[in-house]
Image 1: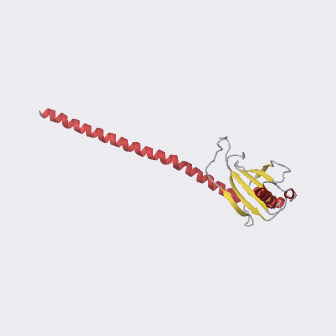
Image 2: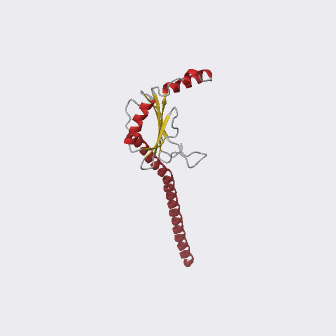
Image 3: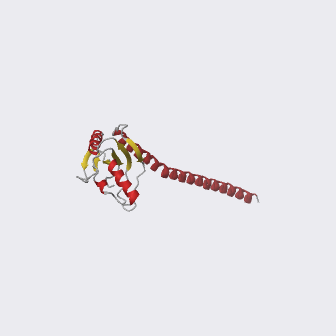
Length: 193
């Protein structure tokens, strides 16, 4: 009978070791899952913050004076891909009003972009009423600057809102008349917007 007890004790010790091994394995598995989940959520957050900081740096590098009055902004660090075209991403944007004619405003903005290290590579609609220039940095970052007449834009918008049509006199407003509405878009990925 003593021999049977010894076997039972040995089996109990072995079973206890097995339970400890299984428990240790479960704990390690849980720790690994927590690390994987944390990395899954932390890494994009870090990347988004880095992108947001870079976008903010680009806007700051333009050194726009306080006379550029910020009206609205949609600035974000996450990479927002178009649903219908995964090769395109949305740009961050800031919208300003500036107290000068359209051509004068664009000269100031062109000089600011150039001073910030951007090179103009495209004017997509030469001769258009609204001005738009595209710029690129040495790091393949894109800047789009659009300038139009606030006076003219408001007249068209107001006519349409009030009557559902445009008035003939709206078309007679000088497209270079100030103040200017300005849109500055930054995209770290492409110039597809």
